[in-house]
Image 1 (cartoon, rainbow, N blue to C red):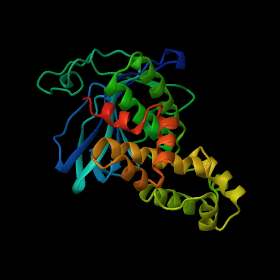
Image 2 (image 1 turned 180 degrees about the vertical axis):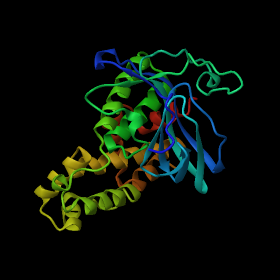
Image 3 (image 1 turned 45 degrees about the vertical axis):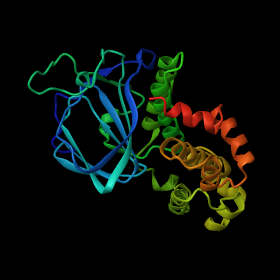
Image 4 (image 1 turned 30 degrees about the vertical axis):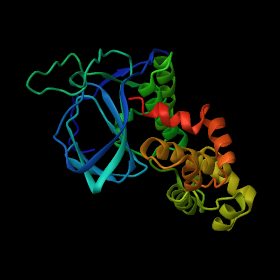
Length: 301
């Protein structure tokens, strides 16, 4: 990687039992087209693009980050973020450190004021012999379960129910494991010849969750048997096709409940559940509360 800063991030090799990630900020955010000022962080940030497209300039290179991708922004490294899609882009941002070593009270405790730099404050990046450092890569494509865990971190951090700090810590450890296990490319011998089609099909499901995505329809798209399709799906997405479709629909339902005022019935129809009673049962089973209560809680702050 070109133009790496030899001083940052500061690496600390430590066994997993010493890892204790602390969440400093977790939120969905929408940014209009345009560039933000260059900056450095005292902590670390996972910036996931939910919708739209962004570019991050770091280490002297421009890195395009598309919807469904995540960029890891290390402590102490200069970077500049820019939204290139019109009219905006939507992100999920999580600021954290690996060892619960920073006292974060305000945004100024996360973002470096270059006029007054506290060099002792830069957080350490945890490294283990089991995985290469997270900062050894810049762009990640997290699997759906990882994205869902990041969404749960946002909800826990926003609503702050009893024990949310512990919940966030556990979720963040799981997110880190998922990212460490994500490799930029697998050996050709490990790659199914159907994988490209499957990835394309998963993207279609993400874009149009309300369509008929039964196991039979999905298998027909791939021109494979239902059993073979299920095996490929589970290997790539970590879950069978029906569970993947349900997860995508639930995630979209939560987004519509948070960001729109359309009726619960229309939310259900918009994600593929025209029967309001069935949608209500599914939502409550997956979320633990009703869709109406979820909408109310998501707008407390």
